[in-house]
Length: 286
Ligand SMILES: Cc1cc2nc3c(=O)[nH]c(=O)nc-3n(C[C@H](O)[C@H](O)[C@H](O)COP(=O)(O)OP(=O)(O)OC[C@H]3O[C@@H](n4cnc5c(N)ncnc54)[C@H](O)[C@@H]3O)c2cc1C
Image (cartoon, rainbow, N blue to C red; front, side, top):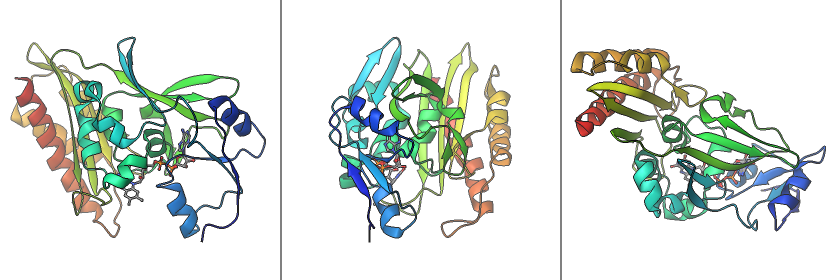
């Protein structure tokens, strides 16, 4: 049962932001693949909902100012069909390929995946490893927050009730860069992630540069393994260093036991997957 709520369906983003500026701001509803499921289960009971379904100009992909940008209403299927995403976000394409099934991909939006704040959201680790920023827009202002600073706790984010995620963008891939993602789950499709790892790095003169390692489903929020990154940055990555950095990443995460896996198994898989993905990125670049 969905329960009763007031539904507003604006046609323009300005109209939506005007509605969100009210004291009792409505909850934004995009594809509904998280929110309607939660509402049916009674997990969330908003009294007012603003549908973003009819908004013009929220579903787009662009290349500008050295960055790739996607509008909040861009769907997971859209990501899979765009050459610019393929060129400048291979890890994001990797995540989109193992995201749910086709019907959900056609509806699920990038903004919804980020805004929901789940530590198991599959688009978030690759976007974080790509150094993405989230542009939040309200009636009166717009601000861009690094995705790495967007989550403040389990399903808690810096978004204020009057703001919408308007855009998510990241720097275009430079020469000598590689980015990879791996989702470990009990099945390939339609399964919640047990451990998600994304790695982005460059090799310059045989040494690692700009290393970012993002870990999903192994802490209350998707997180960067910053100590592991620092071990690799500026160093020539041999097998011993990659192994040590992977072990460090496993120490940095903070997994829980749940129905899908034990904390110990999750930590072990962080170790294995970071070692594998960093090794593959280095091999690819050499
Ligand atoms: C069968 C099934 C399989 C799934 N498989 C996966 C999977 O493999 N990987 C995965 O990561 N997820 C999966 N999901 C979860 C879900 O599909 C994704 O998280 C999806 O990206 C949510 O997007 P949405 O547009 O449906 O968001 P909604 O459900 O509409 O909204 C989710 C949250 O985001 C907020 N929101 C939406 N748009 C905005 C905006 N522009 N600005 C601010 N807040 C906004 C809403 O208020 C709500 O809190 C699955 C869900 C189902 C039902």
